[in-house]
Length: 525
View 1 (spheres, one colour):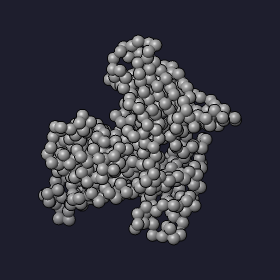
View 2 (cartoon, rainbow, N blue to C red):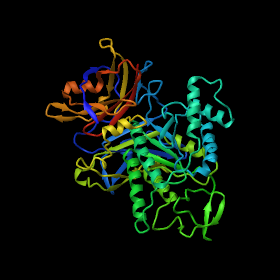
View 3 (cartoon, rainbow, N blue to C red):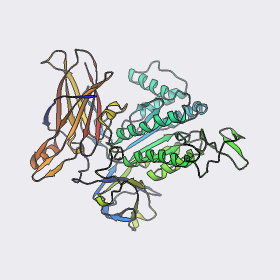
């Protein structure tokens, strides 16, 4: 439960986080597109080279942008003690993201020892300069290496673990990374179906919010062997399966996350084994990682029209998000390289659908290229649908989380850019002064006559304690003030009683109009 508090709001001149400007009162649908040919990424295309269709109807491309990873964006240098939810340790803003998620709870316990070595092998072959995040899903989601940091330290620890080395002689930072990587790859017992769904689905939402501030392509390399389904009764099973898959799919497509499932079992695995529906070969034998055994009497083929299996589900998610499923391979290093290089250059397209068409249903999207020499034999990759929710759709359909849900996330959300610091308040012994800089570009403002109006909530809690405090800000600016705010940012300040104890502030900001949210953890002494 949040209580009300009052902050001080001031303007501070600094570099703003670039973001697309919202058109007042309408739904903006954006999608990240890659265009490749035999030579790699196709650069230099313009808005006029693309045709974007919603349910077969051509749309006007209102937003067009490119992201070139060869041109890293250095924003500002952050002094020690300053926290940010969108800048890395060098003060750079990452414009694309590639995350490897090792999913232990959806990988059979009997396979996890082998999978550990497979994953270490993947990581050891990354380039030191690659920016690839490594995350693990056990009882909760954990981040071993952030997506916007160079992979060199991660590569070093992977090689050390492969060689059977220990943390002796490592720096304190390296010891922390060594332990995090080792813990992330430590096998765990398989959870029941319902428990796996209960953990995995909220994790997807947390990860989506964590990546929401990335303006370009977001790749999720999902290392797992079984898709989490609770399995309904025999009559409604496929219907129930599809409802669960659609929930996962909506989170991914709404947040422009491209999925690349990888079965870590190698040749013969193929995502086909599920807890309730083992794959059965033509002779009626159940397929396993070690061969074939007699299938239980209640087993059904993986292609049964009455259910979904890991194979169908992973393929479906990869296809609809513009990704690719990798299976039947004992060395997926080349697959990982393909995923990483797919983000070297991307196009972002956006359109405003007619509000009359926002019926709350899934709409098919298609991106085509205008025929010309530069696009000859080029391949387009992009998401293939979106849920056409409107302003009056329920919050859960719009993927608008509650403030407390974002505050409880184990990873910071980045939909609203934030930089924060806390220092002892010299005027108030036993109090800490919290300063939070909020990026105006990430908030939605509406033009009312000659004024611009917006509103956002800010909530603050202390880690390890219950509840928190929230304040709503509703700035109304003249056009000159608004233009100034877009070039500058806001500082929200508050002196909070901490009784001289050390701890961590959990801070969340959420835009009232769009639902975009950002969160950050700020240490205090």
